[in-house]
Image (cartoon, rainbow, N blue to C red; front, top):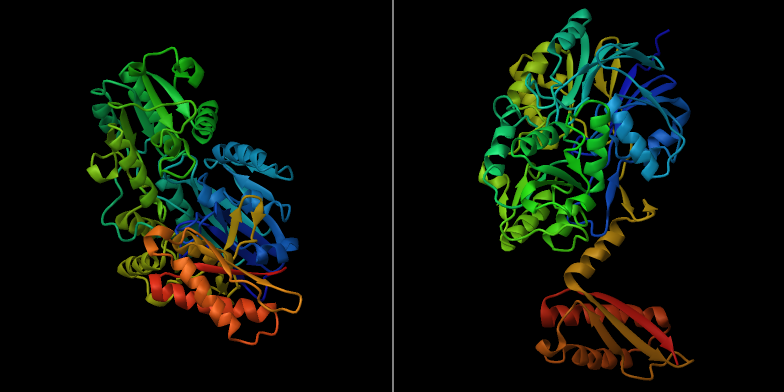
Length: 553
């Protein structure tokens, strides 16, 4: 029996950012999630390690949740699963590579209440509540990435989280155009939910096959140790690096837990091929001349604390890079704010005398896993949907996606550009906007999840940029000020260079406090804040954080 409220699609996150992919399909008393990824902190989030989607709506309706379907193994699609599973229980459906990635991730986060259902995208069909799902392979930067044809009570929809049409992918898992076309031709497609990140890039995204030869041309002339880095789930790229090492007769050393675990998983599944004696561990590598080694190292974006970061700052406890070594970045700074950190690492390596090959040099060391304009239009032509919903990009990419849809015959009103929490209702072959679910960013710092908000971040930013001044005001039992306030600063000014600005501020503050009839500690703190904020801005044009402390003596 059809539900009178129709099919609801909710983009809880993953639309105005390229991360935090989390989408909900809801029909009556049944709900299914597609993907559940993390985001990464921006420059205004000091101390924050991860950004999570807001699970509130899902947790509130967890009795409806029939399962979670995962399209690929990148963290922006699966990284939030350990946090969600701490709130509820739900079975997960994913491909073999993603299954093994998740087992490691759940172990790291001490998650035990999970059930993984592994499906083969070449043959398996499965159901999650009222949703019948047929998957097909798509080309992306991690193997075992899939798109979904989802049969719902309101009709068939396609969900293609990320793709390009490449038929010569480095991991030999090409877009299954034949199957996708067959699924689209079987039934009219009500809606296509798909990746819009490449909607401003002309043409087709090129194949990554040529990268191997470009890596080889650099590596064959290297006279000392070679270091290479890429996204830790870029299995096809690692296969190319390993083949290059074989061609130049070098052993491979894996540095960084994420790279090591993912390469071992892919090898065990047969997605990566190499002789068992090619890869040696760090301890064994000490017995080799560095000229006979290729290091594949984690941390391609220069993330603080990563193996690449520690290596470049000469802080890695087990590996040392030397002048004359070669370092190859086979990754462009894709995620928001990653370019600053990657540029920093490149500069550090160059300054050490390392021969660095990176994104700005145009040496053909990286291609995107996201389809360009022609890839996107080709998907449109295969699926021929009635409606369109762009995902996995920002507002400007969604607008460009809309223009591409219009260029192949869609109407603007048939494209739904959704912000976080917005929804679309499909009923009797028609689509309309639904309610908006209130959402927020959930920030992770250490063991704290969601306990950091805008106030804390504002304070951290102020401390980092402007410093802090602590003002200690001493009073007697009657509340009368008995001594000149004592001011101490950290990260604000170098006192000798500012002519005793703290002493002068203390004198001025003392006069101001003594001239007022202050009733309680709260009024003393408020006046101290007001006076010092104005005083320091007038003197230094800075806004340090003021922390007034009233002490009874």
